[in-house]
Amino acid sequence: MATEHDRRDRLAAERADTPLVRLLDTARKRGREVPRPQSTTTPSAPRGVTTIRVGESPHSVAVSPDGSRLYVTDFKADTVAVVDTSREEVVDTIAVDEGPYGVAASPDGTRLHVTVPNAELLLKIELPDDVSGSHFGHAPYGVAAGPDGQRVYLALALEDRVWVTDQFAMGDFATVTGLDFPVGVAVSPDEQYLYVTHYFSGQVSVVDLDRTAVVSTIPVTDGPYGVTVTRDGARLYVAHFPFGTVSVIDTARGEVVDTIPVGDGPRGVAVSPDGSRLYVTNFFSGTVSVIRP
Image (tube, rainbow, N blue to C red):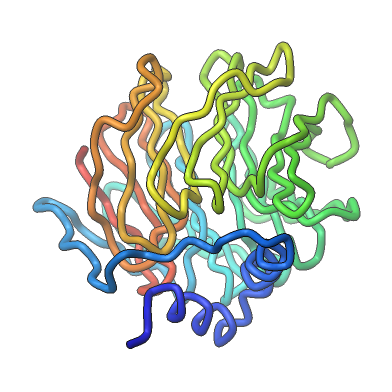
């Protein structure tokens, strides 16, 4: 019987998700065990969840600072979908380079940062649709923007590090090394901590940005991928790809306090500014789940 592990690999190949294939292949070559679900059953979504149809292969999601828009990268369609959160529907699409992955919104709401690992690109989108790109010779997977808008955090999963740069991928502010296949990043509201998901280790690292060093790790279940932090810094949400769940982490306690069942292939996650809505991309079903946590 095919497992979710087999299904993920097959669908990654069918969708030409070469960054994921490269990540899995690199892990296997290093002798790492690729996460395997214990069951092939996708959990039922909790009551009150709605879904938004966004395209073919939604990877990551970001929320505008005022909460009125979602920005969703569609890996196969080579677009960023713009979603009106009050209507819960796509109102625009922005064409980008092939295979967009991570997305982060600037704190002033004027631009997006989008990673394109295949092309080793960091894109900057001056909203509504002015796209420019910086080639910098590395494959960025996840991305986060600092609260002052000056720093961009890039998860270089194949290099076991996070690079802190600027919106043009030219500044070299800091590098956090010794991270195990980092795929997702989120920055605390005070920019004191960086939260990093490790896809093959089943944990989230907490990085002290003043020291650029890991100060603690939080165990989670298999396949941690996208991560987001609430505006007050009290909660982290971690999507587990393709395991159908989101972990809720209390940052003060440094532990998982709840698990939310979601859709098919959760990959990206973002939380509304007021904390009342959680948005999760479902890579295999072309939707975003809207959850009231």
